[in-house]
Amino acid sequence: TTAHIGVTGLAVMGRNLARNFARNGYTVAVHNRTATRTRDLVRDFGDEGSFVAAETAEEFVAALERPRRLIIMVKAGAPTDAVIDEFAALLEPGDVIIDGGNAHYADTRRREADLRERGLHFVGAGISGGEEGALHGPSIMPGGSAEAYESLRPMLESIAAKAEDGTPCTTHVGPDGAGHFVKMVHNGIEYADMQLIGEAYHLLRDVAGFSPARVAETFRQWNTGRLDSYLIEITAEVLSHTDAETGKPFVDVVADQAEQKGTGRWTVQTALDLGVPVSGIAEAVFARSLSGHTDLRSASGHLPGPAASPLAPEEAERFAEKVEQALYASKITSYAQGWNMIRSGSDEFGWGIDPGAVGAIWRAGCIIRAAFLDRIRSAFAARPDLPTLLADDHFGKEIGEAQADWRSVVATAVGHGVPVPGFSAALASYDALRSERLPASLTQAQRDFFGAHTYRRTDRDGSFHTLWGGDRSEVSSD
Ligand code: 6PG
Image (cartoon, rainbow, N blue to C red; front, side, top):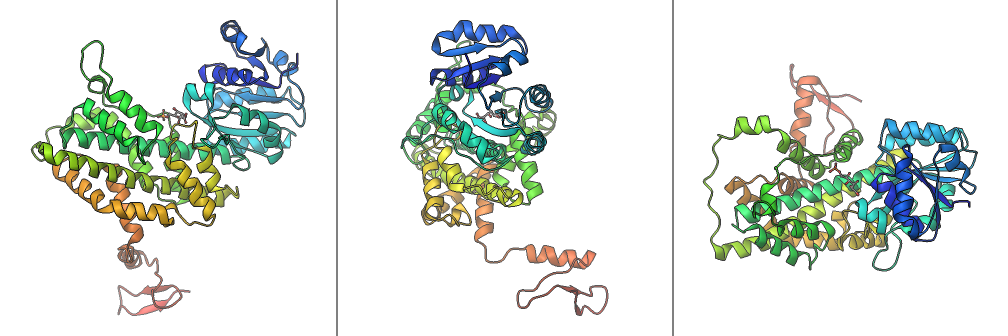
């Protein structure tokens, strides 16, 4: 038998992806460094479709129809390079290697260029949706040559999640690193979303005085409205879960330290390099790292704050409604920042990414899937040159209607000593963007004062310097 596609690296993501292809009628060659995993897959799931178990890399490559298409599902970084080297040596011009891991887009660019020189196609595909998504339909973000994408398209479309209108959640994102870049930003948005949800939960508990079960109920209700999303849905599930051992709310027995594997950090590092402000994502990454700093936290635990005073029950209901507004407005702001970053990466690397198409393929399958994504898709479809999501009439109107409650929630949080870095950074970004004048004029003047860094004027063109140490006259510095 010749296989349509091969999957090497059969940890849970690779295994589920292989099963997804097989369940969709494709013959799948499967391979793993330790062959027991390969045998286990065929033993446990062989009846789901057609698998060709390959013990060695040579057998694996020999099992594939031409042009060969093989997906690597191993750890990002050095393990991925090692596997690429091993297989590239066995392939022939025109064959396609797909990296389905969470690779850094810069690594993908390097690998794509190397393999292109050797006549091979390299597709860096972001795959979102966790284990369940890999099996039942992930959102797939492939980057690479258009030719390679075309040869994969039918297979990717068939295994991808389908949006409500039936469209498969995959598209040719752009050349080389475009797919992994977009996946990275997806994860950055995921961090920001999770942080905002966490802040809403914190406020509902400590300010509104709700029990975890009541907060779960609130989230469940929000999930029937404009916040309808996978992350809100699982939040309600987590909050209504009781720890079997202690009988306490599960959320109260989990250590309050959030870990990270690195994609959120990459998003922020890359944003700094591109000079694009993504404060919501940055605050989310910092909030996770602060939570893990037990040293700093225990050294600061004695510091004073306001006395705890939950709201009266009659105020709490209204406050919860305001929190929904604040959460939604902050979410729009974070997503706008994420899309600004996609545009900036696309411009920097000449990828030509279609912002609306990104919204379209995130509608289902991925971790940030939400009803909201279809509105982002349509905002960019209606106006492909939309400079930012906040400039969309619809989102602009919604955020305008939410802004008073948003401010009130941030002010209440500050008054109660509840940290809301995500809500407040989003609000600060909103206010800064709509400000006619920013104090950046002062910053620039200070730079000119101490370093003769020059400034531009509001009333005429050119570049100027004031002789601060002399008679303070202005000289042109063009
Ligand atoms: C996805 C997820 C997935 C992974 C995250 C978790 O899209 O399916 O984003 O890629 O669960 O990388 O990231 P952290 O471990 O950094 O929270």
